[in-house]
Amino acid sequence: MKLKKLTALLLSTVMTASLLIGCGGNASETGSEAAASSETSAEASAEAGDVSEKTEYAEDEIIDFTMFTAMPGAEINDGNEIQEIIAKKTGVRVKETWLTGQTDAEAIGTIIAGGEYPDFINGGDSMMPLYDAGALVAWDEYIEKYPNIKEMYSDAEWENFRQDDGHIYWANVFQNKYGEDKTTTHNDEAFWIQVRVLEWAGYPQIETLDDYFKVLEDYAAANPTMEDGTPNIPYTILCEDWRYFCIENAGQFLDGYPNDGSVIVDVDNMKVVDYNTTETTKRYFTKLNEEYQKGMIDPEFATQTYDEYIAKLSTGAVLGMCDQWWDFAYTVNDVFVQQGLDEKGCNYVPLGLTIDAGMDQMWHTYGDTLNASNGIAVTTSCEDVEAAFKFLNDCLDQEIHDLRFWGVEGVDYEVDENGLYYRTEEQRVKAADTEYQASHLCTYSYFPQWLGTSKDGINAMTPTEQPSEFQANMAEPLVNCFKAYGADTYVDMIGSVVKETGPWFPMYSYSNNMTTETPGGVAWTKMGEVKHEWLPKVVMASDFESTWSEYMSVYESINPQDFLAEMQTELERRASLGQ
Image 1 (cartoon, helix red, strand yellow):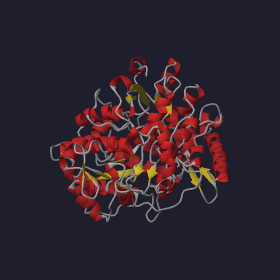
Image 2 (spheres, rainbow, N blue to C red):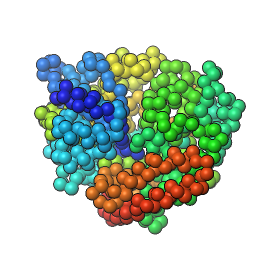
Image 3 (tube, rainbow, N blue to C red):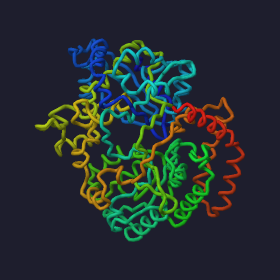
Image 4 (cartoon, one colour):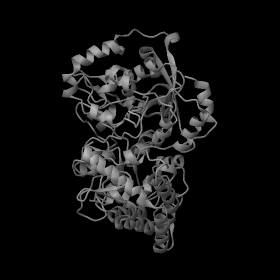
């Protein structure tokens, strides 16, 4: 609530983004385990107020809540059609606002200083300041009261969200899987390349960083412009604010490690390793420097904003980049469809590169990835906490979940004789249209949600994971690319090995919540500042060796060993507890 005051506060402090280098969290009591407890859930649902058993709420009964998310996002229109349907079924309507200018730390700091909070909040990497300010409501009694909320995580997984005072204050809403895993996209980081480049090159095997840049160079030399005369950009990099992970962390992946985010975990010796100083990382930046000197890297990379980066990708002119899927694809792919650029081969596919040929790589992790460092929270400014938690529970009701992600039956999707959901071509085009999204669709994208199989046991929870929709949405050049590489999904395309991650994974769930109250936290903050300043310089340097040496000297001066020592202690703690 307090919508006008909150909006004024947010608009007066222009804000931008911060979030996870991976957003994770998976439920373990799903599928057959969930079915086994269905009777208990049904009883609890009746007590908690199952959406399906309610008559529609009248307008004067609907509560208007507010939600601020420390990520950029598109606001929907007032009177959005599906939002109104959800409001009548749940008794709640949420006005969502998003970052539009600063970092999450700056935005959350401003909100805390004002002392007045939205009803719901996701502070990204700045959840701890909200916790320290006493701004959040404990979840404990509501987890037990509302079965859909409780079902998101096992008891052991919920414990990962517990804070020092013994209470739970937020929950990560992403990558929870119900029933069968239906993953089709690689939501995480990769070196991406347009399928038109691969088609032109004859669909070559690309294993290494050198292979990757060689095909980009060759294509750009033979095809300096797009059909309309727009100059092709072989490679660009996003360095803005926290998104400099697009440039800084590739070394861990190129060495074959999974995304622990802030350190490498040497499993053989159970030691943390600083990927910023490895020989592989230096070789990576040496390569970027060489490509920059050749004119293969976007000369504007060091100064472009996120919006400029997305606009540049949306032209179809950028041949490749390193990024996380969620950071660009949902916006850019819609533009490609609207402009017909997908039919010209502008869609991106992921490549799991290594520094040398023949190495295993883990760009994609197949097991559970629980990031307990951030998530959605209810604040102390909320005047109806009970209704807020009931709405979080209602968001996971299958009827509401279908409305959020599939839409309205007969309008946004159809159901065949076997009960399978599908979209017509007209419905697919509408779903990709930004005006239609703003006026009609309402995903409540940072509220609790499921991936995997619908509770009907037939459909996917989201259209992107429904096999028929995933395949139907693919333009011919993308279909041909998958076929050429023997892939059915983006996960197949990246080709990571299947290895079980340790109980410590991911380590970023610890480092994301570090504060400057410890020497390690101070070092972690300074490490980020130094890398943000120096890595673009390293890429653009006319004398790479001397600039790299200078960068390493500055980096060592801020005592990264303090950070590594605290991470080592946390690694040992997690390993011993088996969390």
